[in-house]
Image (tube, rainbow, N blue to C red):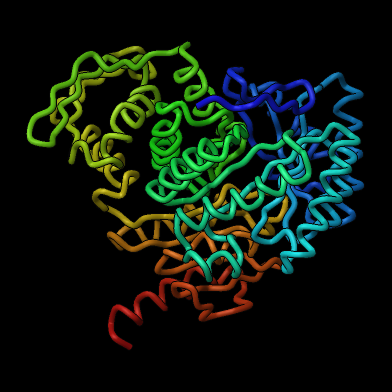
Length: 447
């Protein structure tokens, strides 16, 4: 898919340029020292673009300080302001950083006012050479769009095209678009629809790829690789972020792998493959465990999503951390990888499905620690969908498909959701997991 060039500081995206690797700080932007330190670590780890949340006017001032300090230290990595709920903050941030991410679903409640504010934003961006990311999430499309198209991949495509048309109306081409979802099927279908719609309309905006709220550990990496690789293999995508509920530095190796593989710098460790009766048997000779995991997700994720195959059997080996050979044939680890792959592709569920955001400056509690504890205590609930979300920005929307949700309110309080309905509000953080388990148990017993 051919896309136009978009200039973001010293980075050029699209137009055949290499895939850009990016990530997002999980510090509070108001904590300038911590944010500057994390940006330095992320840049040194290979991040080519770094996003920071900007929820308040005070954070705009902090963002300017962060930007100035980094440039003063000779660090030119472009910064992106992540803005929700305030078009005025987006306009102010556009004077400071190289790119502003807005979410059309909550840019402004009134669409006519949103159009006028967007025209103001474009004017400022044009004056300062700032790029815009039209960043839609499956869970925050806005009432107007979902009332017309439902909460569907089609709705995501329609919302994106509406805002890309506003870019065209304002003669603004320095824009990137994303359509993220935590469900890999929804995510891949939405991007495919958008790519086809842009081609039909003669548009060529670069695409930012990611599986939002992917979680952490092996499952988060496999899920992200499945969704992102399915599109990159079709030539769709110009920049990637692997969103993990971990330190953001941990996101970069997996994102770098995807950029290098689909940029032609890296090849799979798959030695041979045979397919019979919907089952793929794959033999690997991988240099390490993570490489095996990512290769497997990229080699077979798209085939499973598109129902070209129904299952995968892993054979061969990878090198352990001590250099010894770890055999896969008929091993428990091979079975674990096979299960994780099928779960990521939503073909078979062997454990609960978790939806968890990576955390950012809006998160007001220890998200990673809480998520790991929720996973530990709910591991027996096979097939149940459980969400652990940092805040209300995307929380209630992104967990629309979840059976249960744990959403941070701030001030050490939590709201617990049963599907889309809040069933317990303002719960002290140290009591919330116990209550979540109690409510799940009550429903299971019929109480």
